[in-house]
Amino acid sequence: MARELIKWSPTISSLQEEMNRMFDRFFRGWDLSEFGIETGTWIPIDLSETADKIIMKAEIPGIDPKEIDISIRDNTLLIKGEKREEKEEKGKTFYRVERRYGNFARSIDLPASVDMDKITAEYKNGVLEITLQKKEEVKPKQISIKTD
Image (cartoon, rainbow, N blue to C red; front, side):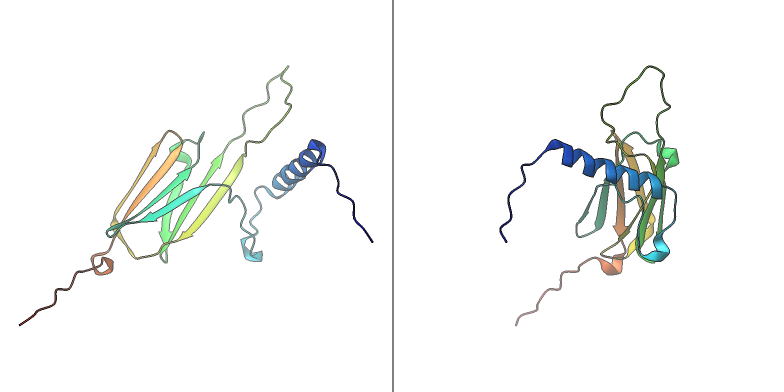
């Protein structure tokens, strides 16, 4: 049985986007973590490591830094917050809504143990940067070889 190619149509793409938004709205605010489903994982992050620190950058524009909760538990970095939807304005017609709103939470397993007293966080231009200093015993040490 031969299959025919279906011509791509923006309508199919739009339908997929609308279905994604519908499911996002339906499950918004539900804690599904006990079922192995993480909700609100839409924060794009970069995690990098140097010899003495771990740096995490997250793009979360439009959020008041006071509304962001950062914690570490069992060598896992937890970031939680909420991006509030703008109030509806009379006379405004939306043709497309792609920005995400609602609660978000990300948990990132850290590649090394960190010094809890040497953690800093900075929020600038919609990017949250968290710098986590490694514990002394985790930092690599150079061992010299003695020769005769």
